Image (cartoon, rainbow, N blue to C red; front, top):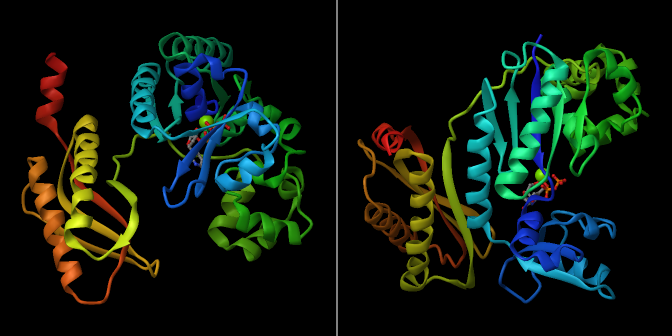
Length: 361
Ligand code: TTP
Ligand code: MG
C-alpha cells in the first residue's frame, strides 16, 4: 500500500498578485497574458475565486473577460512570470523535504509519496498534509489544496474536490462513494476529446463509466487508453511518483510588429537567450543543443538548431549561435516575415559542479 499527496496551489498567479498588493484581496483579479498587439489582445492566465463567480476562466480572451466584467470593479494585471517561477521554485524545494519521492508536475503542482514517512497510516498523512499547508502559508503566504490517496490518481482527484484551501482524503474503500457521481471529465486522462466520445455513448458520470463494459470501452477509445480509463474509473492506478529530468527549456515571445529585418529581430534574442540561460543555471543544468523557433506571419513554425560536442559554457555562445541560426533562416529567401520568435535549449545534463558548490555554501 502507498500513500501519496497531490498538492496544487490555489489560483496561483492571482494569489501571488494579491500578496504583493493586499488591497486586491477583496477585488476581482484577472491575470492576463497580453500579447501586446492591440490593447486587449491575449488570454486570461488565471483569476481569483471572486472573478470565477462570473465565469472568468484560464484561456478566455481578455476582451471577453472585460466584457463580462464591464460593470464591475475588476483589476486586470499582466503576468509576472519570473516572480511566479521564483516563488514556485521556493515552494517546490520546501515540499521536496516532506517526501520520500517527489515529482513536480507543473509550476504549481506536485506529487509527494510519503508512504514510509507516515508508516502507511492515513491519519498520519492527514497530519503531515496539514503541516505542509501551514509551512507553505508561513513561508510564502499562499494557500494550497491537498489530496491524499493510495495512488496519484485519487490524490489528484482529491486535491481538486474542495478547492480552495482544501484537504481531501480518498481511500480505496471510498472510491465508489466519492467518484460515482462526478462527471467523467473529473477523471485525469479524460480530456475534451474522450469526454465527447463518452457523452455520445450516454456515459456522463464516473460511476457510469465504471459500469461500462471494458471491452466496449477499448473499442471506443483504443486498447491502451480504454484499459487505463476503465481502471481509473475504479480508482486504480500504479504510476510511480518519480522525478523526471526536464527535456528542454524554452521561451518564446510575440514581436511588436512582424519583421524580416535581421537587426530588428535579433535584438530580441539577447533577452530571450538571457532568460533561457538563467533558468537553466538556476535549475542546475548544462546543455549541448540550442534551437531557434520562428513563427511566420503565415503562422507556420520553422525551427533550426545546433548541437555541440560539449556543453555550452557561457551566455554569449547561445546568443551568437541563435543569431547565426536566424541569419541562415532569413537568408533562405522564403519571404519570411517573423511574428513570434523563441529559443530552446535541450540535450540537458545535470550541472554537477554547480550543485556540489551550492551544497557547500
Ligand atoms: P492551475 O493550477 O490550473 O490554476 P490556478 O492555480 O490558477 O487555480 P486553481 O485554484 O484552480 O488551482 O494553474 C496554475 C497556474 O498556471 C495558474 O495560476 C496560471 C497558469 N495557467 C495559465 O497561465 N494558463 C492556463 O490555461 C492554466 C490552466 C494555468
Ligand atoms: Mg493551482
